[in-house]
Length: 222
Image 1 (tube, rainbow, N blue to C red):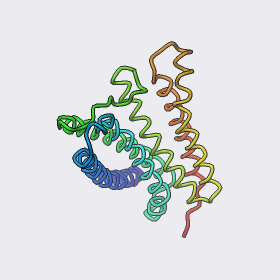
Image 2: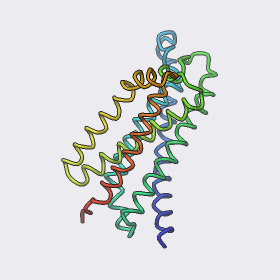
Image 3: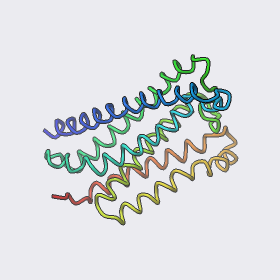
């Protein structure tokens, strides 16, 4: 029974995420192509579909995380889904959608980049690691954005102080990887981006723990 409820919660969050993701990718692609058709392509050459899309993914996942954290928790409890089950479903669904979203942008980007008027910028200029590590870093950044969103959504569902604290944590976690990367690269004598990968991975672990704390202590509104 517990596994069925966990599966129910995960599937519901997945389908909601897939629906939103499909609309997001379609609208983003149309807007991107329209920009190059309307404006001078030479002026937009530095804005490749893949680079812009992977950055926009984090905004989408952040917003979706806020919606899930602040809106779906009451729905879950109304179906007798426990806090622990919702927590697991939330983490798993965010992980799955983040991976599929990154893959979707990369695949669509291969097609869009065949158009003669689109941008040619590298995926992420600050990442100079092996391509596989670059993709892993982008995926972890996307998942981090989702976890930050759920923390904020659930925080404000609890009370304003918890939500405000979540916002402060999100700001620090969003800005510091880029700032810390050069220092870690110098210490480890490695490629640019390795520090960002390490710091972002640590932040994901911290947010996983904080999401558990927020979910465990949340009081359901009737």
